Length: 168
Figure 1: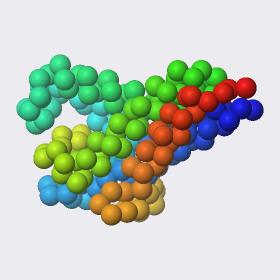
Figure 2 (figure 1 turned 90 degrees about the horizontal axis):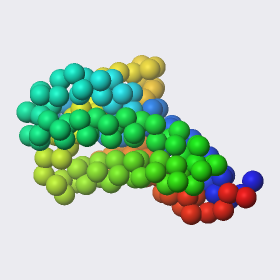
Figure 3 (figure 1 turned 90 degrees about the vertical axis):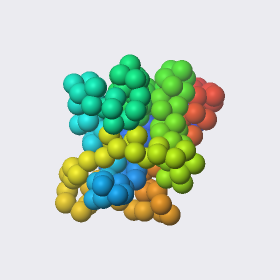
Figure 4 (figure 1 turned 60 degrees about the vertical axis):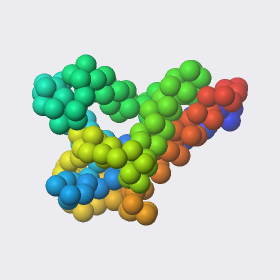
């Protein structure tokens, strides 16, 4: 098996674990006690389509942008699968890696307030859902960001690198 295949499979596993089983960041202010993770995002995506007007007001963006964000969220949720399929198709490894990388960078920029108010626009990812009380999704804060964000960055970077490597 070629190095590109192996890296793509590893990237897909890391991305899927980071998406659904690890916390990306914890809410602050009125969102205290809520965690951002893939399961919470998946629950809120349907709500974004049904209540786009409410999100338009909350996020101060046009309604068409709410729909684009919702479609991007769906693509992000299946990015790990794209990376796993990327073991055979280089293009899917690259495409599947861009979404976790983008979300990881957005969370980091928002956490350090590089773009003021960005974390308020990421509130649609927050949820109080727990699979196993106080265990899953796993929250291990490193600095101001939880380990899930670092996992997304690692999985996205490995997948991107694998997209440019041999599959033989």
